[in-house]
Length: 202
Image (cartoon, rainbow, N blue to C red; front, side, top):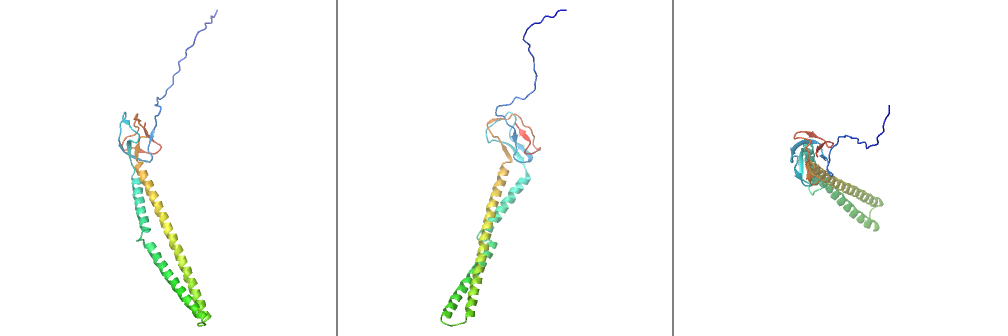
């Protein structure tokens, strides 16, 4: 038996599955967990950058935002002119200052008497001790006042930041388009629960 070898071009067909994608195609994700309250677009719609696509309902986020607002208002009141906490310390500070000034005057008088050989050394020492004690008390209350005021101001600034963050989180519940483009596919329906790891549209 003879075999004849023939030289020729061999064509081989290869089959593979795939998905056609646009150059700038991206999956849309929500920035927070929640239930899809409303879908504002349909498949095939043309949208511009910043256009709202979905509204996510998250009751916890709304409560957090309200709590942050109340906390901010309370913190603002605590550093205001009608702050009971600061007013109490201001009263103590004024009283301590008045006592210190009075003890200072009495000490000067006692020194003048002592220089004129009037009074005893013990009286002078008592006046000195009283003045030192009242000065220490004044400095202590002043330190408390300044520390409390600083703490309340920091707390207020923190509460403002927390409120701004909660407002941003609330606004993030409206999912918007990152670019001008076309809505290829909606992957979820109203009423479905979604997470930040779940794509909701293409």
